[in-house]
Image 1 (cartoon, rainbow, N blue to C red):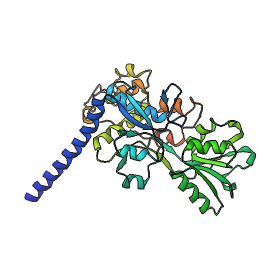
Image 2 (image 1 turned 60 degrees about the vertical axis):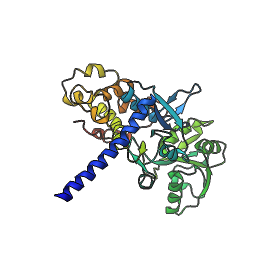
Image 3 (image 1 turned 135 degrees about the vertical axis):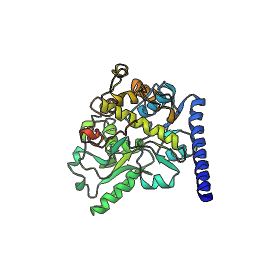
Image 4 (image 1 turned 30 degrees about the horizontal axis):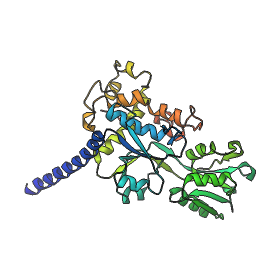
Length: 338
């Protein structure tokens, strides 16, 4: 019995410390009056400020959704542009509260950096863009080609692995930033440019003559993109994770920005729990029970955010593909609120 009591005491202490770490994170955000979000800053469709400093993008929407859940105000976010070289240290040091920057969830990042990834918000994969003048239609025809790539990314490693596994010669041309890499490709310094397929569609639009370039069909890696938080802030991680699931559940249930107020009168128990009409589900996140209603009211559901930022309603025109709901052949699956 004494051993059991001791084990329970230890478990209670661990739970207390975990709760304290969470309270500090959420309380810090609340007391500060804004969320600080680590974002890209150069990638159209995901995270990009305009000349007036207004940020837009799929990852940007996610941070605004968190702010809406906490403050009932999606504008209470400060966006910090981060590079692959400084994104993890910015999160580790507390410079940002959450990293929402087209970042791949990998084993080494998950287990060695003191970070946790909350959920896969975008299933992606690495691809190649080439000049049409090269006259190739497949990545397997790139033997001996020069490829522009950003250094310090999983992209660089995947590139080397792909060429080596197919016994092809590779001339890698690396750059510190994606902006430098795409500019070098545009100037003709490289035959090809490689990054996540979603990024290729956005970067293509920045080229001098977009129509002179094509994205090849091959996807050479799995790139599950996910927001990250500091390890140990378990309940903060829950808040970030359930922001994503709430947006997915809303899409599956047909709840949108335009009809969310009408849906408050719905008899569907799933919708009533999602919108906080029934149950006390916001309390366990340290939020009000209408937290998900706030997200949908200001940002919309997952499909709405996808469409306007990277999908058919955007210049990128990226198909839903793996990011379709599980009910429509995709991998996106919102967990139940109950």
